[in-house]
Amino acid sequence: MATIKDVAERAGITVTTVSRVLNNRGYISVQTREKVYRVMSELDYRPNEIARALVQKQTKLIGAIVPSLLHPFFSACINYLEKYAFSNGFKLLVCNSQQNSEKESDYIDMLKSNKVSGIILCTRSGKIASRLDQFPVVTIERSISDSIPAVLCDNYRGGVYAAELLLEQGCKRPAIFSGIPRIKLPADRRAKAFEDTCRKSGVVPVVIATSEEQFNDFDYHKAINKMFDADSLFDGIFATSDIIAAQLLQACTARNISVPKDMKIIGFDDIDIACLTNPPLTTVHQPIEDMCRCAVEIIIKKMKGETVPPRTVFPVTLIRRASTF
Image 1 (cartoon, rainbow, N blue to C red):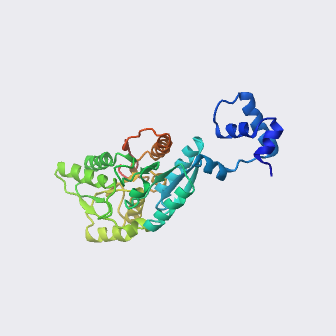
Image 2: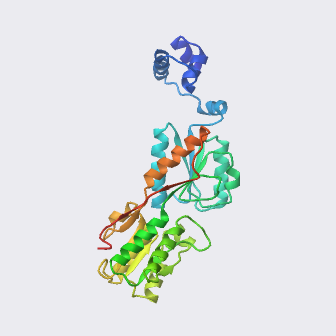
Image 3: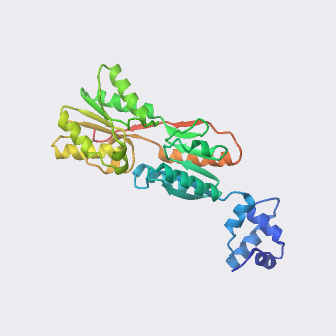
């Protein structure tokens, strides 16, 4: 296996010069740089990343912790985070916490001990915030500390869009599947905006809370059937995720409720499933790719010691499909 010394000897330069090329330090002529890379290719030389990390006190790795790799929203996040990490010269190290705070803590210890350049959190646990001070960290659609920057979408505006559309379509008995009681998330503002907008028009929406178990299992069928059994007179429902909205469509089909004739349904996120349902879902588009790009950029800026905003909020858009008209 070739060493850095072999590269230096073949190129006719010093080991120090090869090291400077590899670490992009100091002035190196274009000719010397090209010669080093050509010799590295000829010798099939691969730099020792562990040794480089010890010298530089960090790797070209960015860690990402998500609560579930099965959830379409978080799998989309991982896809785009990897894309923008790679385009900036980094690799993405993915950790799946499965909503377990102990696993989150263990993963943070592991990522820090492996000298990652930064950590992107899609977790909601605030218990870990104190352990991340003075470390490049950013959250996506989560806010766990005033000292940790967050990348969010305009959840409140999304809730307004949903309420306005259902009211515009003539819905008199709207309902909303909201967040999980006692667990505060930025997405809670979707429900608040929906309620506020409905009440301003003299309409009182029915609020149906979801549970952590349902979120973990992606299964809302029991709650949906319970809702329909208790009140079959709803004419419009805002689901605060496309997964809930898709399962609402399934329940309507099973009960011979015509969508959108008898029931209008709106989701949130605009993940791939929104285009695959029958009928396709009207939904609030969350710019996941832009948010992930921004998260990677914030990590890199924090690495360089640059100031970053405490909150970056991206606008949402209403995507109208056949589930409402």
